[in-house]
Image (tube, rainbow, N blue to C red):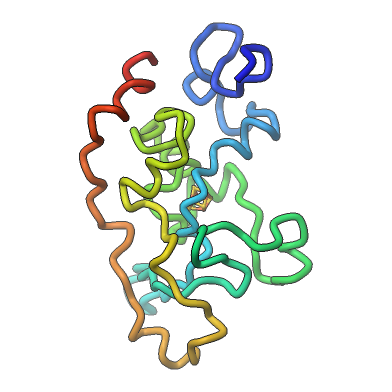
Amino acid sequence: MDQQTDPRTSPTDLPFWQTKTLEEMSSEEWESLCDGCGRCCLSKLEDIDSGAIAFTCVGCALLDGKTARCKDYPNRFAKVPDCLAITPEMARNSAWLPPTCAYARIANGEGLAWWHPLVSGTQETVEVARISVAGRVISEDEVELADLEDHIENWPDEDPMVPAEEYYQVESTL
Ligand code: SF4
């Protein structure tokens, strides 16, 4: 990547996610923070008493189950009326973002994890760490709303695998 256009760098030579607040990031930087895991595109259930959120393995109809990417990202708001744009405020306060989400991690001062493509240098680590839902979801088109409870998964509690040696490379240079 060209140094001038590399979103990982800032004028101070520290990566932007270590020097800028979520509000200060450019739209390119903001977009690059998404690791493409697809977890925010899963149906969730909220416990009416405790407010606890349970994630399911049921994805939005626009979620590509093989890649964990939105099938129509530019038009997602028009096609899915309850799709929400993530904001810094949401990143700080929303219980429906998984704790592994880069926006939530930055908002909580945790920085980016080893599997994040901006740290590892490859999208592959999101799958290696089993953060990506690719290949592990079904579509909401295939599930009755009343049966959602049968599809609860503990994604956010999954312990990301320890990175293999080759994935330390980029991280150790930061
Ligand atoms: S959970 Fe966060 S990092 Fe994962 S796809 Fe959604 S916005 Fe991107």
